[in-house]
Length: 322
Image (cartoon, rainbow, N blue to C red; front, top):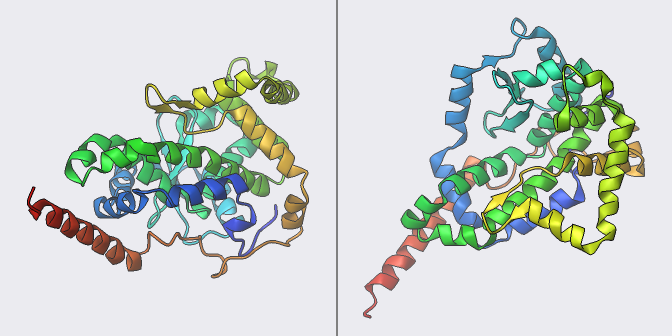
């Protein structure tokens, strides 16, 4: 199993992820959302919830899972070590959360559905999100979306900014961020098939009939899906499936067949080969998780001052004679 000492997330970040994040950060209203999110400290209650209502994995709790997790943390050179929880839930899924105290959560159904190699690829995928600093943006999106109407009334019409495109940009970035995390899964798995198998099982895996599923057939299905783009109308349908603008419903992940296609392409690339050979971009602080500029405490006061200045401007406008 390769170990990528000092690797930077930029070494494996998908260009679509990088492009979408830049677009998101440049949108009007993003800084305001970021500043209010810092005030609400959204990550802490989630950590408390899982500590109180899930099983925290460790040397004496799910020791096999913990060993796989420790190997992935070491190989992707993440420190300090995040927490990992197992949550009782019948849907096979996993997710990462937190920036100051990051953690990943695996649903119990996922453990029953997947082999150890496939579970490890899922763990690596979620650690890829943490390495890339995705978790803070994801939690900001969830917070902004769930409280949009309230924020619109209480924080200078922020809801209007969100409805004007910020939510769309969040989801566009969120979907593309999965492509970077998939690359992390491939790097740590060192084999393509376990990662692709985990995706197939997430798409429609079965405990009872799993032996009748064929990965080569699912890969061919992925190709048939890509071929749909030859008809321009199908491209419109795909867009609308991802972004139901009429009902305000957006998908947070790319279709699994699309993720398979992207990962297959990267697995045969020169970029992937160079990383596997140890030629990759390193973090400024070797081994450290990449941290986005807006989240450290040193930036919090700057964001708060922006809010105060905006409030002063609103008060000034209100005082003007009509």
